[in-house]
Image (cartoon, rainbow, N blue to C red):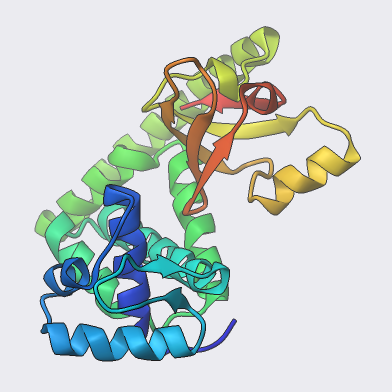
Length: 249
């Protein structure tokens, strides 16, 4: 993937996000989103067009080329994961986290982003993960730690592990799949019930056992299903979702 400056990545990210929201984007939309002058936008769009990252002509609708969309999606993914890490793990205010993610997203490697994803997933599946862990960290920031508090966490962890095992056993009996979830639910992918080629395709999309899946929305007729996994937004057919056994969280 070609290396771009932070500024040009910002333009691709803004164009991609506006397209997702409005389906069409013009230079004035980009200027308003990034709070820059029309002249600055025009200059950046000409550079990106010349390097074949977007299709641009004055006063016309802007569209991303396949390569431009690929880079934009990766920048959006980095932003989303960094923001989630700052909020979920470091308990940073959402507005501050969003601003910091914008500053960090351009200088961080894919390898580090993938490691952050795995850590966030660990937080999600740990018996003391999620809000419980964040609440504990908030208390630690304000008051520090003490032995009594740690003992309480140990006892809570034991009960959470037992509860998690009971839920897992119950779910394994019912064979819950991704297609059974409701919008807004999270689940851990436990098993892929598909043949070799389909299984490889799922795994290439980041759908591997242990991945945390967030079901964003389901189309009015039940197909397709929109999910988020490892910072990517994916669309699956219902019959594909039925091949993914999950454990709701």
